[in-house]
Image (cartoon, rainbow, N blue to C red; front, side):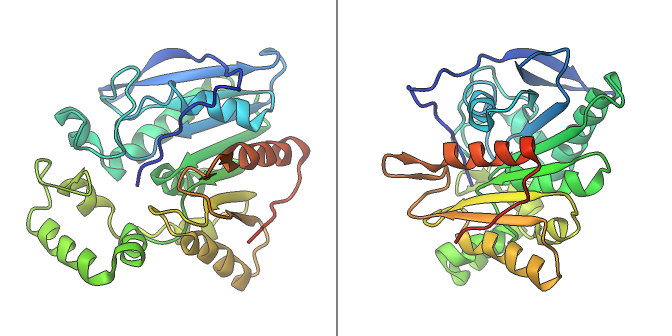
Length: 296
């Protein structure tokens, strides 16, 4: 379920600063920051958290996000715990440290991301008019869950994720029998961080396999925009389209889905980088208050 977003040479990417966030109950994680525009007058705050794997978000993703959205804002990315500086990761846990895999659980992601957002907002209460969450791949489901749990988030932008659970995504791509066989083996060793499937430890799969983000998306009232590739081999486009179908069935008009023809998990199709198009459109919507839109 990886999303490794590499730089495009033609872009003049912003360089992030880095720091260490210390959690109240112990432990640390690296964070990265880019300020675009006059820091004294900014009223937009953009948060992002990682997809799967031990990837340093400051290396590629945060600069891509800031340059892609193209709006004046303070951009903050929180790495998962025990991510090495500059690490690209492989989209799975096989190349990550034992400490990373031990903490790479949904409960830890949720607690850490919530703590980071809350403390950031407490530093300057009442300042930020627009608070945007951006999630890629696995981070999209987390962003939807965090947005649902908070009252202060104003916009949600998701790349390469949808409303299905990982079991449903993988069954669509690999076949239900193969996925069920793997699940039976995982369920026999649910706490194992040594045994792996598709690059991730069994513990990761046991903790994440059946969470369906659809319920979180449908609980949101803020503008939501999801971008997905037609030929995504990690999260089928149908998973994102299901969010839109369910939203329409519920009479909701705040969710938009854009499906990019021929594009993969990173929204790239051949030589065309749809990710840049998607982020720029999302940024314009955030800046101008344009409602979400859908394209199939």
